[in-house]
Image 1 (cartoon, one colour):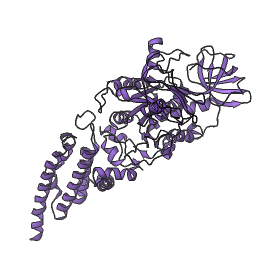
Image 2 (tube, rainbow, N blue to C red):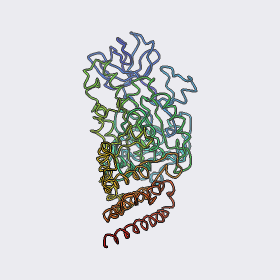
Image 3 (spheres, rainbow, N blue to C red):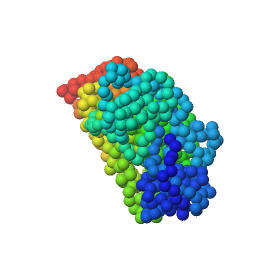
Image 4 (cartoon, one colour):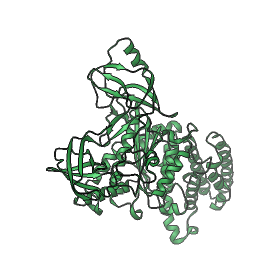
Length: 601
């Protein structure tokens, strides 16, 4: 879309990415601005009389006072249409692969590139019901979100062409038939004079409207046992993964992105190191989609804003990502956003706030940090879309607190707006226990809401989950005593708690992403595995009450067997659990009979 210049002014002051320009007092807040001869993209963030404060999203090295500043009269927007999937963008939707071919490794200021290929033709198939009504001469009323037709974007994703959410009323007067069209071609017209192209623009800071909000009672299955069983996330839910350097935030997000049952994955690399983002950009195209066996990039969209890219583009990148997510949600898809990391995004806010000479709040962050976090996370949700289908946007944000200090402002404010907290533990990571999600510090407020779904999988889900978490809390208390006086002084009942807790850690919580069997665990296997471990604990506890020493239980070899079950029982052969379960019951029942007989003598 060509930018139309509405207001013109002059640059009066330059402070890094913050520019003061005169003559733009009549422009609107958050209007898109082009600055300098290279037409660097920026956004008006404050108006003061006849002057405007602009934050630019590109490198402005060499920009001079007196350079022109032109307002386009429209907000910063992204182009939505077929061709998004599999593309790598920066924070303002510039296609990095296309710019690399044009500019090389370093982008030149002012270079745009087309977000979507303007020359590629897509096969448009009109909605059959709508096309029949038009052919029969019926009057078809226009409503926001109305589906006009579809385009096969990839083998995994069909892009629906819809009436934009801001258009309502009138009738359809023209609908193109099946054919090949570019993204700018008009496929429908209305009686109010509206022309609907295949690709449409939408402002990134404005959430797309929905028909209704639905309860978050459907879990987002990730295949990670510690997440799905202990700290579940709902479709349309919000989660945070806080952790210090090296605790596995990015790798946990990668595992969730690959295995979760979302239809579309959007990964936002916000302020991460260049080498880490490079790993993402090289690994994701090679990942195989477990659903189709094809490339995962067919349903993945990447946004890359590394730490050496302009800081203002880092600030806007999460809005770009969530707007793209809402676009696919409105088609009826379930979308998962991986934001890595919101701490770097908050640091961008802090730098921009400082350059605008705003009063700092705690640790130098702006006072509006909580508001901005809320605006981002509140765009998640499971909804009834305008066209009547169900869709969702789930947001999983990584947080990188300095020194792993969860009391710092970004982590604390994030906890106010999310309902699922996967706290990463440095001690677990150092012990090579992955995922290093702490079962003590983490929590999920979705557990009760998804309970009904899980009980259809296994009616014992809630009970074994509660019993297991209670046992792990007891183990934590006993660990303090063991560090002081040693384990040998504990009674056998408490030794059993430590013994079972170790089985849970090794055989359930720990998961190997490189194990072909254990890298993904279906819900039925997850509950069954935990059910066997907790049954072992109950039977072993009965034996101890009858007088059996802990050494007899530990010498049965059941611990090693239970720790290996996750890797020996495949997702498609859950009946193999029965063989081990029978062996376990026989062994412990024999031990129980022996000591029951002795106690009766």
